[in-house]
Image (cartoon, rainbow, N blue to C red; front, side):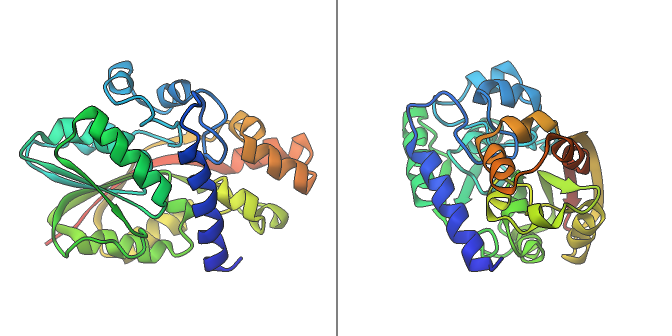
Amino acid sequence: MKQKEIKTVVRERYGSIAKDKGSSYAPAPSCCGGNRAEVISKRIGYGDEEIRSVAEGANLGLGCGNPLALASLKEGETVLDLGSGAGFDCFLAAKRVGKEGKVIGVDMTPQMLDRARENARKGNYSNVEFRLGEIENLPAADNSVDVVISNCVINLAPDKSRVFKEAFRVLKPGGRMMISDIVLLKELPENVRDSIHAYVGCIAGAAMKDEYLKTIKNAGFGEIKVLDEKTFPVEFISNDPVGKEVIEKLKIPIEEVEEIGKSIISIRVQGRKIG
């Protein structure tokens, strides 16, 4: 698949999610979607208080972990969220960094930015800003942020090496990166790996775990640690609308779906910009 094709399809699909404001479900392409957003969020590490504390419509249930549970954010820090969507993690971060801090959300989907900005107005988040941009080319200055976070978005990027280099660039010396993402324990079947539908559903875009961690190291990060990893529940594939579409289009038997599920895990990773 060509990078341009992938980005176009991803942008279109997530744009359609952003427009579906009336739904209480996580609509279509999510690595962990297919159920109510609140239920999904609880399963991947968010607490009841966190879920209730943000404006309605900010949580779309599109994550695969809770990077903020590990970020140890401090008042006054500047946080950059890669692929900020409707703003859920940004708003949680905003409460932690306080009025003296700042949160910047970057997303390449204009419809998502519109929704996030609307949520920011509704929640009166004066310390949150949303910028249009690709995570491979971040609209942020060198050495300008204390913490980079991301939740199940980097797997969608065709050039993950570029993403991590950009994250390293914008971090201040000593700054940290805290991400949740989907990785593989073994290679996917070729028909799934080459499917654009599976890519948008966060499956085909996932890298092998060792390769993923090596890419972070090669970008310059030190003190890299996998703080948590969980098996990707097979029901998230078979029940998710995009997962169903992949299974139907590729005629994948349920046994193979279960095997694919064993190949996928969600991880929470931290790294630091040393020096």
